[in-house]
Length: 254
Image (cartoon, rainbow, N blue to C red):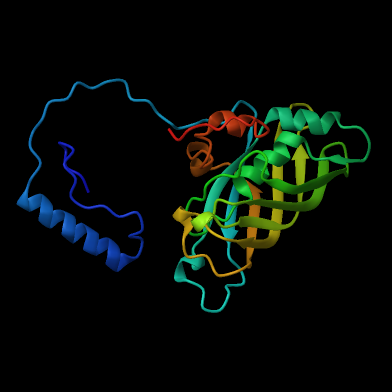
């Protein structure tokens, strides 16, 4: 809670539960009444926005993450749902269309973008993104079913030593799915996938993970609604990395 003059009154990064949130409001209002904000005059400068819009002909895919089944004794934060959007670009579609043979690897950038930014445990909050070289296994094979329809399946494993206390954090499992392309344009029209596996460790922003390896499931489905048109992928503010997930460049936080 902050006043119009910038005076801070109350703050919490984890006040998600109703009772904690109401306590935060009461505390902030009490401090505001004791020391109200004062009128000030500001020179309004151009405001830089971090909102991204998908490149032309991109497909927006919604992702849903859950810890299922919930391990016995797991922290209540693990009952939450992780939500995000994954963007499939026209260059990904072009690579699929131009691939030779009936079976072939998923386009490298498409697979790496999905792995680095969307095969994540975001159930309890926003994790730090995987680095470009954190993929230990990423082997996804596509199969042409018709001129417009393709299936895919494969294995993934990503790890680093960026969990709390410098310990290992990771996710591993199997993903299967289908994608449909428009036969006349460089655009995907449908995408559905299901990733099932295990995660372990947690980042400082995602504390409360069950001990050891715990089951995690991530669903992907293409959407076209008001939310998908206005909410960009959570980590697209690392724009250069999202466009080229193979780069070793580390974009700073905005």
